[in-house]
Figure 1 (spheres, one colour):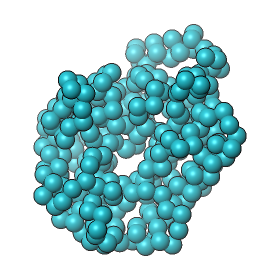
Figure 2 (tube, one colour):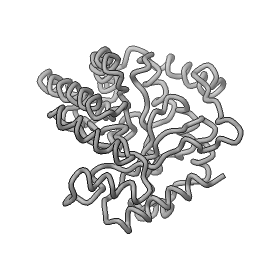
Figure 3 (cartoon, helix red, strand yellow):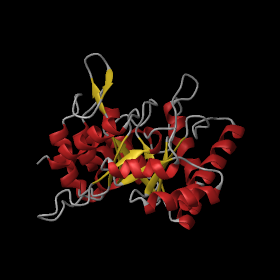
Amino acid sequence: MKENNLGRRSFLKYTAAVTAGTALLGRPMPAKAGQKGAGLRKSLQLGMLPKQLSDADKFKLARKCGYEGIEGNPMSDLDAAKQRGKLASEAGVPIHSIVYGGWGAPFSDPRPEVIKRGLAGMETALRSAKALGAGVVLLVPAIVTEKVGYGDAYKRSQEHIRKLLPLAKELNVIIAVENVWNKFLLSPLEFARYVDEFDSPWLKAYFDVGNVIIYGYAQDWLRTLGKRIVKIHLKDFKRKGYEWKTLLEGDVNWLEVRRALNEIGYNDFLTTELGGGDEAYLTDLSERIDKIIAMK
């Protein structure tokens, strides 16, 4: 693996700074007294709603089940995207973010043609988000593989993502890199460092609560990432048996997660990223989020 431009000494210095003085790295401020959780809103992914329904009926059902927002997907037809965004807003479940992903054309790939495809895809996603009325695009920043080393993935992904920041600024849409099972950004300290090195308000963190349970603790990641977090995914995972669970049935310490959300002052959407289902299933899931929000 090639050494990245910061090196081990810089990383150790950065780690010490995060550990000893969170204030130096944008220390999160707690929510005001009496306002704990006041801004937390329930959201679900568009693909979780019954596929046979029209967009208008999907959004009505989401609202009926207690959700307040939708996470969508990129759309190449911007006029259609504007119409979908309008329908969602009228139903009371605005599309607040979209998932581009990035698995198919990762910014860690050494091949120029793959990077070209990835940049084009993200440009479409950013313009699509604007049309939908969303303020955030989720991006998987890099993938470490047998042939792509960690250092190269780190350096290449930052290099290529920086090319997108001017467009993100122009459109007023944030690029949010997420922690996923891509063998990359494996600690909260490194994730914080990765985001900070962009030094841009248009590059933030999208934190997935369930994705870290096999090698960490969600509340620790939340407290370390703090104000870098712009959006949050909700999932649950059971270490024994190594399987995904519905909310409140896995090993996520939801009470500590809830306390951490208060501590970092997060007041935005909590989006479930689970399998879809009917009205009864979606209502049950909504009520589970209510229980999480009500924890103290």
